[in-house]
Image (cartoon, rainbow, N blue to C red; front, top):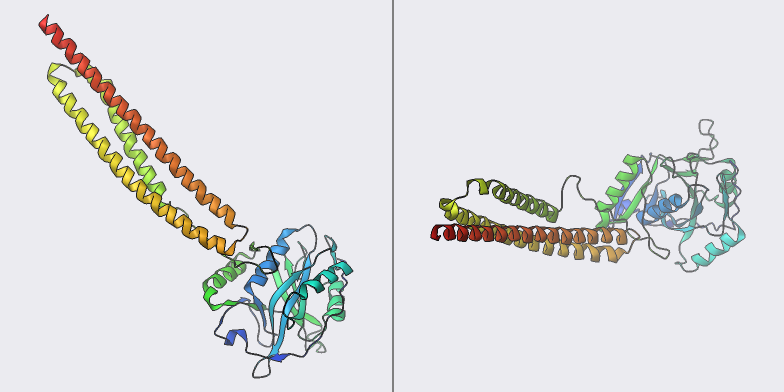
Amino acid sequence: MNDDIEFGEVEHAAPQRALRPDEDRRYAVVAYGEPREGELPIFVDLDVLADMEQHALSDTSVELGGVLLGGRYVDGDGRSFVVITESLRAEHYESTKGSFKFTHATWSAITRQRQQLPADLQMVGWYHTHPDWGVFLSGMDMFICDHFFRHPLDVAYVIDPCRGDRGMFQWNDESNDPDQPERVRRTGGFFVIASRFRAAELEYYVEELSTAMSPIPSRTVAGSHPAPVVHLHQPQGDMPPWQTLAALGALTLQCLLVALIAWRVFAPATAGSGTDGKVAAALEKLNVSLATAEARRGADLAEARAKARAEFLDEAFRELKSADEGAISRLQARFDQSNKLAEDIAARDAQIREMRSIIEETRGSCRRSKRRRSAKRIA
C-alpha cells in the first residue's frame, strides 16, 4: 500500500498539568479494548469517536482521513496522557483504495476550520482508514508520523470499516530495546469519555462496538460537532399496545360475524312460528353484545391512541433536540404506525357497520316471515 500523504507544519507544545478524565467526576469513562499498564493513556470523546466511525463508513472504496485535536497533559504524579476532544475531516483530498493524500487545499481547509475553534486545542495526532486492509501503519504512514507527528505524545488512529477493527498507535519509548523494535506500536486499547449524565449511553455504545467487532453507524448534524449517539430499540416479540388491542378487537368481531353467518345459514331450516320469540331474543342479545364490544373497543382504542400520541410527541421532542439523521426515519416509522392504527380502526368500523346491516336485514326477514304466516292463518 502506498499512502502518499502530505501535511503542513504541525506544532509541538509541552504537556500541561491537568486532572485525568478518569479522576474527574464530571466524566464517565469506559475502556475500549484492554489498555495495558505502561501505555500512554488516550482518552477520546464519545462524539468524536462516533464521528470518525461515520466518516470511515461514508466511503469504503477509498481511504479517508483527518486530524485529531485536543491536549497533551501530565497528571499530579507526572504521568503523561492525551485527551482527544475534536476531529476535523480532510476535504479536497486525493485518494484511492490504497492511498490517501492531503493536498495543500486540504491543509488550508483544516487551518480555516481550526480558526473557528478554541486556540488551546492542539494537534495531537491524525486518523485514517484502511478499508479491508487491516489495522497497521504502512511505510508511508510511518513517514507521516516521523515528519509531521513526531511529538512523543502524538497518536495515530486507524479504522478498518470493512473488517470492523480499529486501533490507536503511540510512540514507543523503548524503541531502542531489541525486544521492542517498533518505533510506533499499537496500544492494547484506549478510553472513551462523555459527560457523566451520558454514562448509560457511553457504556452501551462501547459495548456494541466491542462485542460486535463491527463499526457502529453514528449520526451527526450539520456543523463541526456531532450530535449525541442515541440508540432506541424496541424488544423483539413485544407489540405496541395499540397493535394488541387491534388484534383482540378484530378477533372478537370476527367471532361474532361467524356466529351471525352460521345462524343465517341454519336458522331458516328450523324456523317456525314458535321460534320467532327465540330468534328475536337471540338477535337482541347479539345486538347488545355487539354494542358492548363496540363500546369497549372504542374506549380501549381511544385510550391506546391517546397514549401512542403522547409517546410519539415525547419521542419527537427528544429526537428533534438532537436532530440527527436518523430522527426523521424514526418519526416517520411512528407516524406510519399511527396511520396503521387509523386504518385498523376504520376497518373495524366497517365490519361493525356490515354486521349491523346483517342484523337489520335478518330482523326485516323475520318480520316479513311473521306477517306472511299471519296472513296465511287469516286466509
